[in-house]
Length: 172
Image (cartoon, rainbow, N blue to C red; front, top):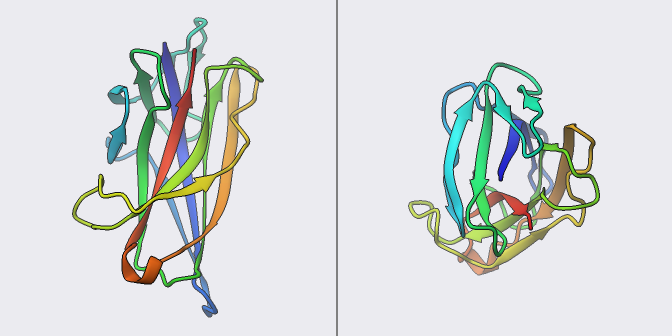
């Protein structure tokens, strides 16, 4: 079963007692896919059209490209790493969001936003613990829906140097 994910991802980082917010927007227009993954994510693709699990033709929410990720086999909770936030101070707020295509509201397959701490900026798989995420899953009928969350960065005494934003897949 293919799951289409993300045409636009937005990040908002607010430094602890910072004077200004830094906002970054990312789309898949550069041809890239994911930064890494955990679990049974296979064959991430950057595509201009896709077909969802019930035969709908899916086009990007904005722009000309979108990320398509596939879970195989269906088990566990695969995670696609879609962004890394670094250079933030302990206590900084980090808000991220993305849109995911949904054709089974209230049931699997679906996805949500999550994050984990990074202990080594040179190794996307370095793990400083879960940062958690939302309890809201994509939930639209044959359409894009947005998921978002705000984390408060915990540097853990300097052990955590970044936050990896994840798209978690849930299917049956």
